[in-house]
Image (tube, rainbow, N blue to C red; front, side):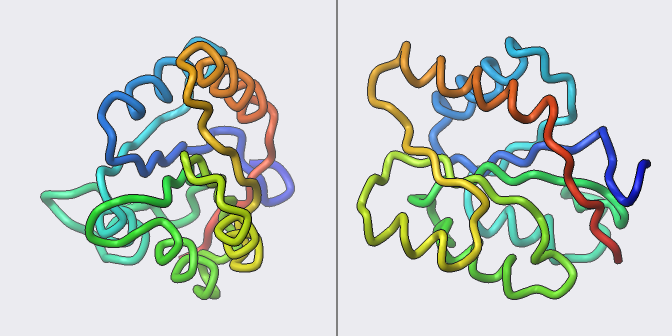
Length: 152
């Protein structure tokens, strides 16, 4: 750890589409990212991981860990906007970087996410090749980003 930042950031992917989730992880790995990646299929799983206590059956965040959340908006149970809202309202977790990675390109939705505190908003291109390129660039960014550790 260096000045409150940790190099080994855990990447959290909240994506209900299995194909998109696989493509995201593959391209992040292809960019050289070796960090731990944890995938969630709905917003409730993300909230359980971040806010719930220890569990023998499901993964939970480690106190003092460093995380970046790649968050889709359109997910079952709890949508990405609500996950973002709850995360950013938390005194303990509000500093966690959240990158919206979604097919939604509605200007009001984008503004809403930035108002709630997302770090970055990336619209998934429909074209497979362009989507892969975006993900590879995101992976290169994640290789060098500094992320604060979360207390508690």
